[in-house]
Length: 345
Image 1: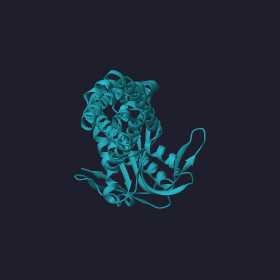
Image 2 (image 1 turned 90 degrees about the horizontal axis):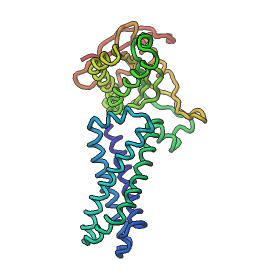
Image 3 (image 1 turned 60 degrees about the vertical axis):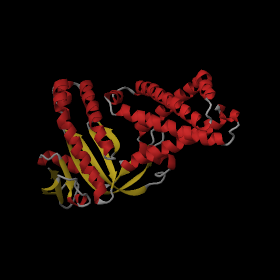
C-alpha cells in the first residue's frame, strides 16, 4: 500500500512539475520580464509547489466526514462537487505558490499585484478545467480499477499470461433472507452501504477488487513472500472488525446486520483481455474455483474464513493472529482431500 501511494505521489508530482514548467514558459508573464529559459525552472517549481499544497489540503479533507459523504454520492454529483473542491484547493495553492516564487526570484511586488488583478482570473479557469479533467479521470479509474486501467494502457494482458495471485471470495451471509425481508431495492441499498464500509480496509491493504457479483465480492493480491502476503489476512481481519463495529448501525437502519464468509486460495491463474464493447481483464484457473469451494464450505463448518493449507504456508500471519486447523475435507470438484486452515486471535 505504501509503494502504491508513493508511486501515485511521484506520478502526480512529475506531471504537475511538467505542466507547471510548460504553463510558466508559454502562458505566464514571466517571459516578459526577460527570464527566458529560467521561466521553465520557475514554472516547474510552481507546479511542484501547487501539487504539494493540493495534496496536503486534499489529505486534510480525506480525513474528515466530508470524504465519507462524498463517497456515497452518485457518479455525476461526485464529479461536480469534487471538481469544485479541487478547484478551490488548486486556486489556493496557486495564490500562495505564486506569491512565494515571485518574491523569491523576481522580488517585484508589482508583478504579484498585476497577477491578482488580471491573470488570476485566467488561472482560476485553468484550475477549474484541470480539476474537472482530473476528477473525470479519477472517477473513471475507480469505475475500471486503477490496476486494470494501467494494464489496459500498457497492454500487459493483450495476450494471456500466467500470474501467481491469492484470491479472496467474500459472500454476504443470509442475503436471500435479508432480500425477502427488506425487498430488492432496500436490500441493494444495504449491500451498497456495506461495500462502502469495508472498502477502506481493502484499499489500506492493497487489495484489488475484481467484481461485485450481487452479494459477493472478488478480491486478489499478488502472491509474493510471506510477509507481503500477510496483507490478505490483515485485510480480512480489518473487514471483520468493521462489520462487527457497524452492526448497531445496520440493526437500527435496516433491522438486520450483515456478515461475511471468506474463501482464500493462492496459485497460478491465466490472465488476459476479453470482450470488445465491454472490455475486461479476465482471470481463470483452479485457484479461483478453490477459493469459491472454500467459501461454500464455510456454510458446513460454520467458519467465517477458510484457506487451504498450501496457501496458508505462503502467508506470515500479522501479530496477535494464529493459525487454527479446520480439518480435512474433499472439496466439490476435487479428487483428493484438502487440508483446511482458519485463523483466530
